[in-house]
Figure (cartoon, rainbow, N blue to C red):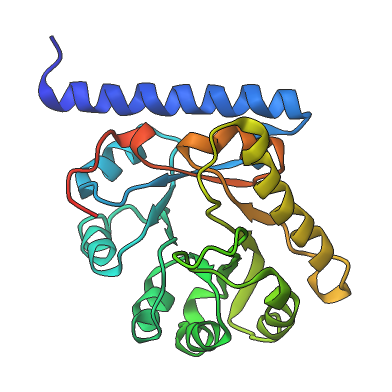
Length: 242
């Protein structure tokens, strides 16, 4: 029997290997290059040791966090991992933008200009522009964050003017659906919105669709996802509530 720590690392290694194989297989079916699909390890509710374990396996460098205070504690514990890439993927309140602007490489959940403006102002010049995605409420659910589809072009055109932000694309968290075809419909809508934005010369460089989690990974990749956000399928059950 493996010692506890060795078994833990072995489980994460197996999970990551399985996910990379799954992404490769789906990408091949879609006629896509799997190397252009980023696996974002969502470490919400997991200890810093879990992130270090995934990192030390050699390939995983991108990690996503939902809660600022939890993320800052992990970042302090993992400060020696200098090439780690931190993504903030949770709802972002205006009063928390400073630390996000200072400590993260990506923000996936921008849904209003006020937040974008604060991130832009508070981004340290030494770090270069902050990569951002606009979160779209693709199913118009009252319980979820995100900008309405109709308001998307105006917000994108305003954010592209902010010099310390690098608008990369769109993110969504669709309503849970029971079958592949219904899942694909929501992701296809987001992909269509990205293509529509790219018709504007100033937005032609947008290249990111952050969509897809454990339950709808296949549908997201088939519809063009470039970042899939996977948590428990890598790390197992969350070790803290949230």
